[in-house]
Image (cartoon, rainbow, N blue to C red):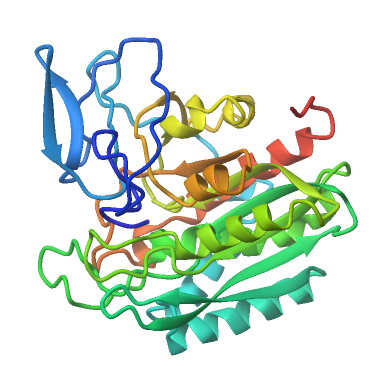
Amino acid sequence: MGPSSRKKTSAERAPRSRPAEASGRPTETERVGRPRRGLSLRNAIWWCGGIAVTALVPAAALISLQPRNGQAETPVSSYRLEQIPFDGADAYENLKRLCEIGPRLSGSPGMKAQQELLLRHFAELGAEVELQQFSGRDPRSGAAVPMANVIARFFPERGDRILLCAHYDTLPLPLRDPVNPRGRFIGANDGASGTAILMTMARYSAEFPRRFGVDLVLFDGEEFLFEEWQPYFQGSEHFAREYARSAKERPWRYRAAVLLDMVGDADLQIYQERNSAWWRDTRWIVDDIWATAARLRIREFIPRKKYEIRDDHIPLHNIGGIPAIVLIDFDYPYWHTQQDVPEKCSALSLAKVGWVVLEWMRGLDRARVP
């Protein structure tokens, strides 16, 4: 996930560098506090003694909420890896394979190597694969940069479809690294974790819902930026525009989309993202996924709103008209630093997230989908 434009605060309301549409406000009164792990904030608002205070916050964090009792909580499920019917060990191996490529920024040799790996992987598992190529932009010079979204379609003949997605590019530089912000960034959690889960998810296509086709999509250019104020979301914006443009000619549509971003943290805590919970057409997805997690006793899905985040689900929803939510653990102390490496991630966390999403999809055959 990206700094200042990708995840933004409600005060600034900009998609990582552009103004954003206003969203509704919750009816309940909540006390707003600082993030648990001391992330510096840019244009976030919290309340101190009844007074609204504005601070500087990075792109990803909008509003953070303390638990209502004022105490930090770190709920942990008691499962062992082998007890979870989603192969977290496979997902973790995928994550390490991606990181072994090295930096995978848009237009780079690392990105090309990653694309070849992913296209081969999904095709071998029976998907109809596509490289959705487009011309991105270098924010430093305005020069064109070749970019491409990876699309893997399962059951392409089905008209009602579910979209599972992540970004697979890495930030060019570890912009928030306290030692060397111009150093090397490989993006184990921020980039590889969501991609790794989708790679493993493809192995479970026989268990996908019978009523729906499923598309696994990886966005390029999510954070191709060299300063925190530069624009994010180039890949998802292109994808959303193409989806909206083809509305009259395609015989299918997305009924729901789930974005996975930074879901491999060894200390996993996934709160409900505020846009996802506020939008009328996405509340049912949030409710269903957290109800699924509660049924499975995955306590790391915490049924409370915490951050409001600008991420790829925003253009999917606002440009493409797709009911899209994000699953994200933004309380990750290694975000955009050189320390975002596989050792800071966990096969168990990947297994928990993958299991919840897969079990949620299985339930769609029985659910009343808006």
